[in-house]
Image (cartoon, rainbow, N blue to C red; front, side):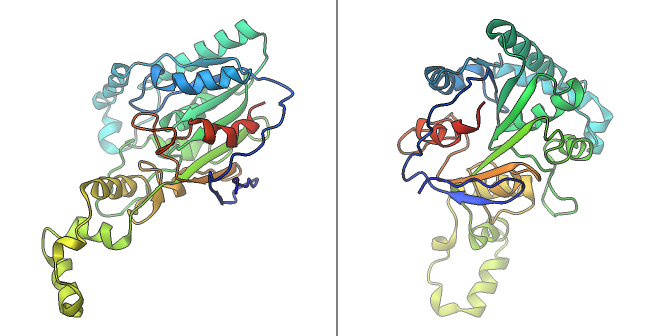
Length: 303
């Protein structure tokens, strides 16, 4: 069954069992792809090629992996250590490249507006861009596995990896802030679950606390503690999910929990079985958001 779509803040789960029929798009909007944290321009070559084959003019933001080291400038800002970091000036390099890319694709193809396809952190960076540079050039923001929401405060073991950046975004432009001028589509995935038991063991098995409690309550059913120990991958995923949303026992795409990848007031979609990143993805066995059969499900939102 192809995924269903619901407007506003509803949550619809779909699967990729059969591709949907996209029909014929009446307009091929110029599109700019915004890479996620740690990704480079080349990671999105297959996606940009697929979009071009369908008639969409595409430009991928020029980013190298080394470019992300520029963010280390934030370490010199006292707000970083206080957890109150603001996007500018530390992220100006990325925001300015968005502007350059939008201007270039508009000039080349003669369109007044562009669609932004933003992967992972590129999604909330796009929201910052619209806040700082305006929305006159943008008709659509479509995000793929973006951690839109700041992590909750006061949760033991949670460290805000953005050091306040997402708090700033949520305060200054919450939800689909620029709607209806800009259409928002936020796509998440239920690819990797981490069970509550697995997540709890990550934190307590080294001290024996959880194991002792389980054995005391139900000794006959526990013959081998190692059978309860989650895989190394589960440990990493559970820890990663918790840093984003405050919980590790949730569904997500392997990096971003589905519950964090939607925005209030947006068209929110959740796929089943879609991996977070183009790096390490396989179109058949481990598709990511930009894989052909997944693209076929959301391309209809491009103008």
